[in-house]
Image 1 (cartoon, one colour):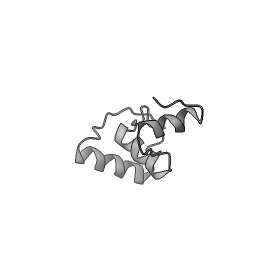
Image 2 (cartoon, helix red, strand yellow; image 1 turned 135 degrees about the vertical axis):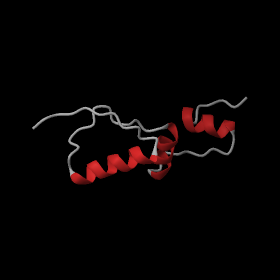
Image 3 (tube, rainbow, N blue to C red; image 1 turned 180 degrees about the vertical axis):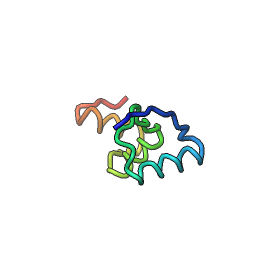
Length: 73
């Protein structure tokens, strides 16, 4: 089996389509540099998995972070 290294611009529709096609054929075994998630994708993933916290105000936030011993100013 021969190994080839190609670069595909995943930002274009043609690049995305080609990558999906090659993946569906099963010819892609390993991506050398897998695409990193953007900050937005990570944030949406956090929301999806419930890793989001809410605070009514700043004092409430610091009380949640530091515990009951937080002295409000």
